[in-house]
Amino acid sequence: MSKEDKDNEMKTKDQEEADIHSFMRKAARIMVLLIIGIFASCYYIFVVELCIFTVQLLEAKVTFLVIFHMLFLLCVCCYLRTVMTPPAVPPAKFRLWESDIQLYQSDERPEVLQKILIHKAKDLTVYCTVNSQTSLRYCKTCKLLKPNRCYHCPVCNICILKLDHHCVFLNNCVGLSNYKFFLLFLLYAVLLCIFTSAVSLYCSILLWTHQLPNSQSKIPIIVLFILCTLFSIALFQLFRYHFNLAVRNISEREYHGDTEE
Image 1: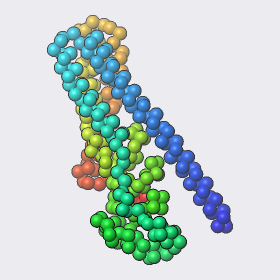
Image 2: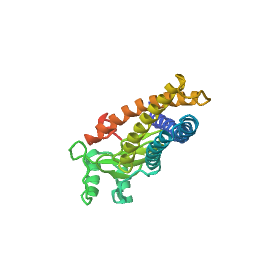
Image 3: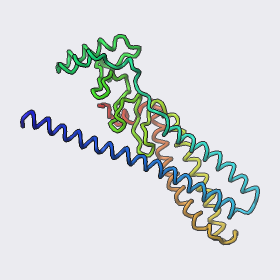
Image 4: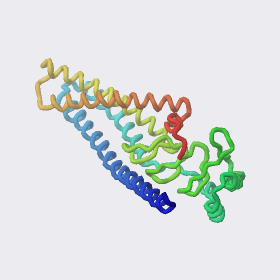
């Protein structure tokens, strides 16, 4: 295969990856709207169908509504902070000068490339290493020296500090700037789903045993119980996984050994 054919094949592969990443960005926007729709639907069923139309005791209504709104607002707030917080990127001082970029691109010898990066890194407050070895990492897309635990996200097309993963349900990367809000969102979401599932199960039992008057709210409440039960199981597993990573101070990429980007 000639060099021209290899270049064409590489360009085709890069274009295919760019198309996939573009599709992921568009799909992520739809997923965020879907999550907001699920929040709104569950809110309506619990507040209107369950508390207002079904529960008869005033004390129970107030208790359910107060606890639900506390957890709901905390969950939604953390979700929006996770979605809307921009990813943390390396400071401008990690970018190579234009002369260094041209010099870096004009040579292919690893020892020469490392000398260029070492010359740039000696003035930085954080000295970049990989696996405790003096091997500096350079991003050809962002044209910068990558600090420790900084990786390039191909979907966002930027280098992100302490990148954990790109989440399609957030339309954002989870990293240094929003990992705290991501963990809090999972925690509050689990608590909200468990509470909502327990209350909807309780009301479903009362409806089926005719201890409450039969109404059209029976089906929505049962649907709410099923959804919240499934979500609570899935979110608990996800929270336990990420909480374990946070305690060990490692990211998801590092846990899976995906440290090439």
